Structure formats: structure tokens, C-alpha cells
Amino acid sequence: MFDRSLVHLFPFNGGYFVLDVNSGSFFNVDETTFLYINKLVETGSKEAAVDKLKKQFPYIEEVADEVEKLIKERLLFSKPPSYFVSNLTLKSMCLNVAHSCNFGCLYCFAKKGNYGGKEALMSFDVAKKAIDFLYNNSDGRESLEVDFFGGEPLLNFEVVKKTIEYARSTYKDKSFRFSITTNGNLLNEDIEKFLFDNDVSIVLSLDGDKETNDKYRVLRNGSGTFDFVYPKIKMVVDHRAEYGGYYVRGTYTHTTMDIAKTVLSLKGFGFKYISLEPVVTKDDKISIKESDLPKLKKEYGKLAEAYVESQKTNQWTFFHFNIDLEAGPCIQKRINGCGAGVEYIAVSPDGSIYPCHQFDGIKETKLGDVFNGIVNMGLQEKFRKANFLFNKPECANCWARFYCSGGCLANNYIINGDIFKPYAIGCEIQKMRIEAALYVQYKLKELGLEVPTTQISDGHCS
Amino acid sequence: MKHIKVVSKRPFWNIDKAHDCRACQTPCKSACKTSVTVGNQVCEVKKPVKRWIW
Image (cartoon, rainbow over all chains, first blue to last red; front, side):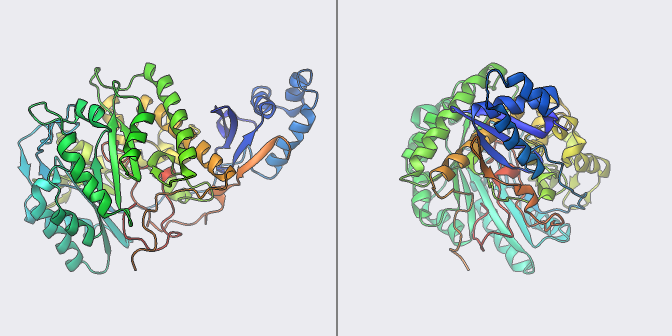
């Protein structure tokens, strides 16, 4: 009954916390309670746990009664929620409109934009076929998502524009939500006006201040990019100040792990929606290692504290700290992973379909193309299975399963060569990020502050 | 309670168990985008009409 996998106990920034894995119930407890629940798990019975702790804590019965009350209310050591296996259809597409980039970022997974092949731009014909494919395979969906990606998608802006117009004018019975991920170099006021007017969300890549950014985000000749990109990113952010619809996202590596400082410096630039992500690579010089994890944990702790403090005067969002403790997505959503190869696909400039953008160019993972549809049904079935949380043994018993929903299949493949085998470092980072997010939400609630969520511009549009 | 503060009560069970509306954003966890995990998302149905993806 008191199975370790049913609860997660963790100390954070001087406090003690307990998460009931299956119900999402979350508690701040005193140290005695923390020790008692640990002992409960260890011994398997209330009596034995009380017996072990009563000398040290004469009031332990009181603690035990409080814990028992929560168990009776099914708030602690609760049973798993019920779920069913969904018949998922396509919802989201990454349109790799440019296998080419005007930057030469040193950590780029896309091999400086060409994905290990020839440089290429997607034709409008292929883009149209991709939109047709998305629409025709999206039974049951009302809202579809398309992300323009690369390489650098603004190298092919004409196709981006035409594709948006084509999708919305051709398929009026479904809504299309667009996003674009850009290094910002080609941004200007006209492009931003088009993107803004067409409700295109924008991910702006910047790794931090000049020193941090220019370490890896460089041109092909190795020179830094901050000086000319920052004003363009700032232009977009200022333009969207009232409405949001953007994220400034950076990458951190083994050599740039001062994430608290980096995130706060991005905030200092006036950016309100920020994300900072770990590099995923086998390159030993920059990859995050197991020995980096204690430092990262400290960084998350530092950032969490600074984040809470700053919310008192200035609301902003660090993406990893968004977590909805009242409800959030339904259980069906929480058990179905990222959808790669099933709900989500990537299309390369020649029309090839891959399970996601990170598989682009890996020939053995090609699912088909936009002209003939999915032909490698066996592979798609494998991805369907891998997306289901409980098909991955390590995920099925992980305390973070209903927040993470099973990790990144591409990372699993890149690091372990197996989409079913979780990328261990990624899992550890994910767990520390969830602990920090839970702590942040607790603190904000304690302070009576409104909890920022991912909702950026609610109520703006009709 | 003296020793325990309840921060959140059974949020996973507060959601309609049969719910499977497929409206939520696909949570691409890839760090090369913005690593959306399900925990970082909000339920699309409960959100007001919105203009942007996030």
C-alpha cells in the first residue's frame, strides 16, 4: 500500500514537499512529516513507522494521524486514475521550409541547417501538399498547428506567407495556429507585421547576454551574432508587449550552465516570456553530463527563488515554471506523450515525412512523403506505441510521469538509439524542473500572487 | 492540520475522466524548440479564446 512509486518526497530551498503521484495532490510538510512518510514507505505500516520515530519525535502519533487522514481522503498513496487508449490522429506539423541557415551555431542539431544533406528550400507546391496532408489526416481535430522551422525559416519567407494564406483560405472548417522558430537575423518590421497580423506565434532564439550568446550562436565565420540580432528580437518583443505570442528561448550547454543568471539577464532585457533549454548532443565538449546535475539543481533553486521574488513587482514567465496545480491537461493528454509520428510530424523541403523535426534527414526514420502519404506503417505503429507512457517501463514507474508524459523520443533515439529508452540526463533535468515548478507554484500561492501560466494573450482576440 | 499544508487536492481527478477532446497543443518536448511538457500546458477547453499558440 505504501509503495515508493506512489509518492514523491523532495526537499527544496529549505522546505519539504510531498507529491501524490497518481492524483497530483501536493503538500508542503514539516520535517517530521517528511521523515515519517519516508519511514512509512520503508516499513510498510503506520505502527512500525511510529515506533521507529517516537523516541526522536514524541508527537509522532499526531503526524501519523494527519497522514492517515490524507490517505483516507485518497490524497496520498492514491490509486492510478483511469484512462483509455486514444485513437490519435494528426494535429501538428513542423514544416522545415529551409534546410539552410545564415548562422553557424556550434551546437546545432540540424548540422548548421542542412540536416546533413544538401541545402534546400521548400517549394510552395510541397508546402501546399503538406497542408493538404495535415488536413486530410486530422479526423476529429478542430484546431491544427503548423510550425515553420529550419534551418532558418525566414530564408523562405515567401513560402511561409503563401502557406499561411493557402491553409486558411482552403480549409475554413478547421482553425490553423501557426508558429515560427527563428534566429531573428532576417526579421524586420514588415515581416513582424505580417506575422503579428496573421497571429503567428514566434520563438526567438537568443542564449542570453552578449558573452553567453556569442559563445555558440555565431555566424559561419565564427563571429558573434548578439549585436545585430538583439535589436531585431527587441523590436518584435516591444511590438508584442501588450499581447505576447512570443518566447525568447535559449540553449544552455555544459559550459554555459549559469541558467539563473542567464534567464534573469533575458528578463533584464525586458523579455516577458522566456525559456532556456539544455543542449542534447553526444558532443562531449558541450553535452550536459551527470556530474553537471548538482550544479543545475542549485541553479534551478536559485532561479525559483528569484522568480518568486520578482513576481511581487513584475509578472513574467519562465516556461519551465508553468504548471497548473488546479487541473491542467486531462489524463488522456498526460499519458500520450509528444505524439511524434502520430499526432505530430515533420516535413522536409523535398516533402519527406519524418516523425518529428529532429528525425529529419535520418533515412531509416522516414515515414513517407506528402505525395504518397505514410508508407512505413510499421514504423508509425512503433512510434504510436512509444508515445504511450505505459509502454516505456522506465516511464511507467517514474514519479514525474503525469507531468512529463514520457520524454522526447528523438532524444531517446539520438542518445540511446532506441525510442523506447529514455535519455537519462534529460529525465533528471526534467525532474528537477518539475520540482522547481511545484515549489514556485507553492510559494506563489503562499504569497497570494497570481500564478502566471502559459496563457499569453487571453481575451485579446475574438 | 498542524504539520501538513495542502497546496493542491487531486487535480488529476478534478478533470472529466472521459475527456479526450484532442484540443490541446501537441507537447513537443524538443529542447531545440521550447520544450513543452504536458505539465507545463493548460487545458485548452478551460482557456478563454486565444490568439496565440501558447
